[in-house]
Picture 1: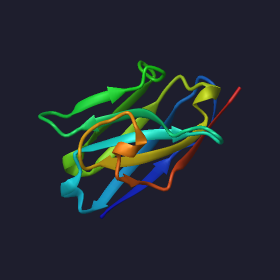
Picture 2: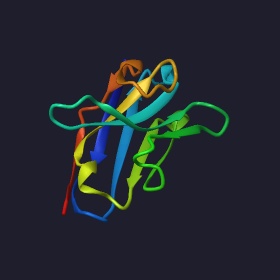
Picture 3: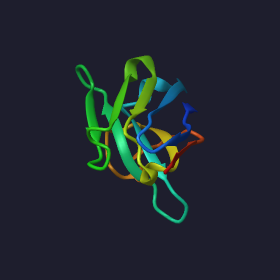
Picture 4: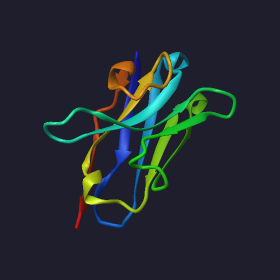
Length: 124
């Protein structure tokens, strides 16, 4: 089993910045990818960004956050951060850290472990 704990998030005005962090523990040797998803009430959980275990790590972003969000971390060190800049009200959501044993996919079904979620609220 893998445990994921998120920290960070909060309330910020539009145009501001927030940072999320995720720490993995347990059977972390099984992790092949770490990612961030977000979810708003009544909607499906959607992909935000991820890193894949490879030489030097490989990064993936949803088009809606490219150029504004930066994912960093190291699977080997069991850490994942998400720097969120130029935040918009539509970024408001609960953000989840997730770990996959098989690779990066844009679908939540491809991730096997989940954190408890961190609220990000962006006001006008």
